[in-house]
Length: 450
Image (cartoon, rainbow, N blue to C red):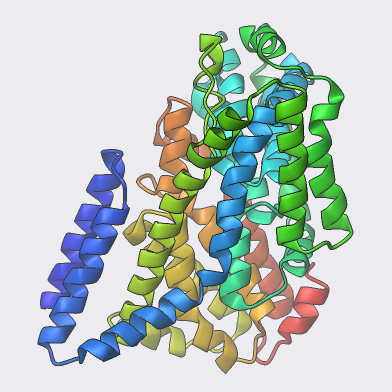
């Protein structure tokens, strides 16, 4: 009973913190200490508790350096003019009659290049929403298309922190995962494009005039060369260059452009790499161009450390034994995917972050995938198609709450983020047609996902 009470208090604290805009690290740490103290009182040795936490943390240590590199890279891309150029050229491609479709496609492309849903929403997404506000178009509809597009890259970009986290947890090759993610997304992506095309035709934009393009051209040198750091990422991914080397090369190019072309001083650039990019003028760009940096990403790393420790504790103490017993009764490939989907919704609702949903879902499902002879690559695929894309659909989860806040809207966007629904739906259909039988080979599914 005391454990259930502690979990209830923890859930309330997590949801309250998220809704108030606080840092989720503190309620997570409080939950860890509270549960650890309760199990210590029940007789579990202190050293045993520490080992459980270490087992959880150990699975995520490899991703920390990559997360920090990504934080520095995003700040450097902004200072170099790479992100401003993506927004500037992207806005030029807008067709009023296809505005909603354009919002989904362009945000998806930007998120693929920069690897972060929040970054894509906070730059191009905000610009698109500003355009939508000058029209009679439903803002929830526009926000849904933008947020759905942002998670195209969050799921399968080589710069995505969630993609790196899933690869690290499951011990699978990142580039192989990305290829499978791309292939399995083709059908839901096509269906999403068709839906957004229909919605666009019924909800045209009255104007495409925006002060943002002029402000970007005034604040940055936007000649095509500033896109080199993004082009380098695409080229090196195609050549299967190791991830850290890819990030470092792109970072070096961006720093050179920031210093040589945009005119930033070395000390100024160094500060941006550490604390994140900020722009003072013009004022219209201030809410768009900010973010990245080592220190903000270090905060993310702290959340990952505490989350993995908590996941290790919950699994090691069998706190969620009821869920584990239910998963243990699943025998077919299809039923296990359904189990993963439901568990990911539970952990996304409880943990309030995409990171916790990924970590805790993986801890719970990992032994059962091995039990039915499914390889780690299949577990990685299922995590990407459940925990990663369903977290934004939980109204109080940061994955959807933060983008909605950036777009100055609310949970009304959820019904229109159709791509996030279609991914797990199409996977359910695929499993029903080909993977519902006992003993189905995960290797065959990974090699020929559709």
